Every structure is written in C-alpha cells, then in structure tokens.
Amino acid sequence: MYLLYLIIIALIILETYPLLKYIKFNSESVNISENVSEDYEEMTSEVSFEKNMEPGKLYTEEDYNLFIINNNKTILVKKNAHYEIKEPFVLKYININEKMIKYYYKCT
Image (cartoon, rainbow, N blue to C red):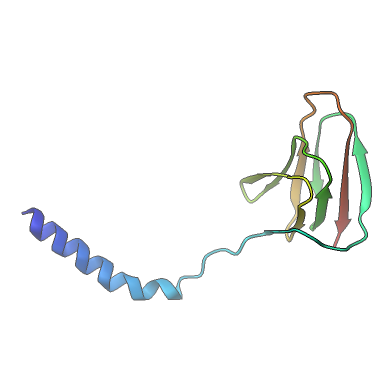
C-alpha cells in the first residue's frame, strides 16, 4: 500500500516539476545593497514613531530599532545597508533606550 502511495507522489512531482518554470513569484519590493552614492535627506527623532512613507531609499549609520513594514513583511534596518523600497511602506521606530536616531531617506 505504501509503495502505491510513493509511486503516486513521485508521478505527481515528476509531472508538476516542468511547470514550475512558468510560475512567476512576486519580486522583492525591497532591495538591499552595500554602497550607493546618493544624496539623502538627513532625518532625526528622539521619540518612537510610525510613518507612512513613499517609495524611496533608506540608509542608517547605526543599528537602531528601525523597521520597514511592507507587504506584511517586517525588515529590521541594519547599519551601513542601503534599502531601496519600490512600494509605499511604513517606517517604524521603537525607542527603548531614549537615544536620538539619525537616518537618511530619499524619495524616488
């Protein structure tokens, strides 16, 4: 009986495998790169916030509790990484250590 199940499963996999190349998965709406020479607008905050932002580029020189929320995904912004966000997103900062943050943003 188990052998019959294994044969059926193997046939299903063999028949559907060639179809996978025709399925298009959603492309990432956030690109991350190491070095980008762009002119960013410097922004600062001492309080927690949640802002609706337009598509653009984001960069920070320090690790903060700064998050990009986009398409039900949450990304922690890491220092010295340049983020290119292609769709409107929410930028959220959680201030737990009462520290002023500085981040750079450029709307595209």
